[in-house]
Length: 166
Image (cartoon, rainbow, N blue to C red; front, side, top):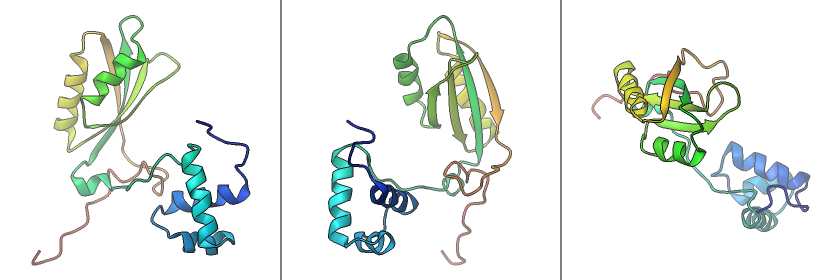
């Protein structure tokens, strides 16, 4: 898979930017924005998918709307050298972990955790800590998002109010 094949040009970049902003945009809408026909946009999107530049399409959901109002980042420190594959197995068992990555520095991994409330977060943290190779964790609760328009934002925003009579 090529992350940036030789044929990736300015029009491809503009198409990817449009799809990133709204993956539900029609090929005609994108074509109007970038100066191509809908058919030409479709051909380019198909090529970008085939070459692995576009890896999928997804919906972005406001976490608070699902009841996930507490958010934290957790540094994980392992006993010895824990292989990334083993860390991946552990984090897959916790649906509250929104993202996980190995990192440089003192910690071995960084987890992005979303939970209903502080008590739920504490329970998740305890489940993570029982793994025999985890030596310690350090948690950072998110108070607010400094870039509220970013995809990461949303956990501390109020859920949409239900209409009366619903």
